[in-house]
Length: 293
Image (cartoon, rainbow, N blue to C red):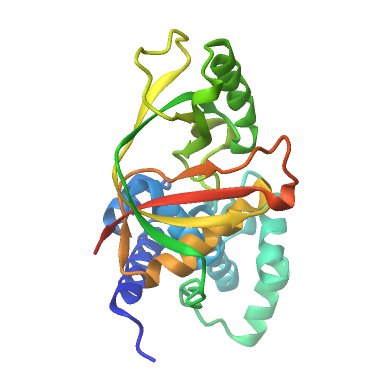
């Protein structure tokens, strides 16, 4: 069956990013460059890439460098220690461990097998693309611009509860608890390609109406949530399984949806309170900003 135009477009752009990685194995990875060249929003490129290929950009880069190293090992003209250094490994031991994990043979064994069998240069193989179409609970909403109030959290996303605790303390101290509608989290970085300590997020509160005065607490900032069209995915279950929802969102729904990600980060609305709700019953609405193709 012929793939829908939008799905084929996504696959072509991911393959373009993959080709850029393959042709620049000796250069540092630049996610901004890959996103721009494959015409994806920076906020969403790596999530789409990982969801469609099943591996991170760093995984692809590492795997292809090992593929190239395997070709050098098989040819038998260079010392394995030299090849290990060229592949970016600090010691022959770490190179050998990674090599054996990928090829099920040590470098020395691989060289011996290829010498006896006659070496044929391997071709770069595109990673598998997940194209299964499934029915998921995704709706399209048009939202007006809103003002929320948040505290920036720098660090692992699962530790954002610290910022929410601080935020709620401010809500109580300011006498605003009766006006609070729900908690909301904005996530700016993909944790699969960003070091945990460098991940940026905002723990936010949505009130019934924007506050008449700016918060006196310097840590609390008024944040504008852009209006426009959003795809909403309702996730029911522990927060620790939210990554599976993102995989479905980016890898299975988006490429066949006819939509493109807008250049804004996704956010989550927490419908019920984790302090008095069983984990299996937690409801999280994930909002992905979108635009028409």
